[in-house]
Image 1 (cartoon, rainbow, N blue to C red):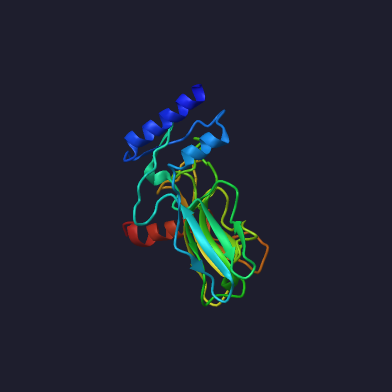
Image 2 (cartoon, rainbow, N blue to C red; image 1 turned 90 degrees about the vertical axis):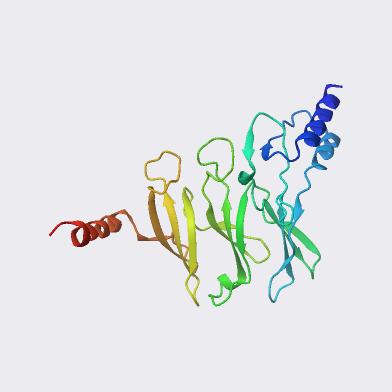
Length: 243
């Protein structure tokens, strides 16, 4: 009886609060599968338009809770609240092979997928047969939430979604990446939590790396702390210091 009352309370809260721009987590302890299914009917996640991979039988169906035409925020139910902007643009991607009629998910781990790049042109042999992703998967500040405050990283997979792998440093926030034309090399810019306060701010150190997909080596720092200091001192001497 208590479980039934709890479920009815959730449905009532949903109907009264469906336009509220807050997201809360569901306390799902001791719920039956039937009760979970009933709750999920109110959380109508969407599949984005299919994306076809050139010269393959692969089709991508990104899964989101923020439909581009609707962008309604789905209310959730407990004491923990999230801003609607904390919810991921995509939380998974479904891969479908037209030839084999097989499907698979990109991952079964919790991730925030901000963006992805397919059908990459004018690159090397590896990148042309790969998908790049901006993904957050680490609760860096240990607040038990995976949101905008946690770092994004550059990931790569094959066009069928297999062999998903992190490319950028684990505890740094990816700002941007640039593909070097006609190669399998990528230049990335990150923010490093220089003062170890578990936050990424504009005054934290920016690092540039070169990633070579033809090598198993770690990303190479192009601009590191030592070189940056030298450049800053040179700027001070040439442009700021009174002659």
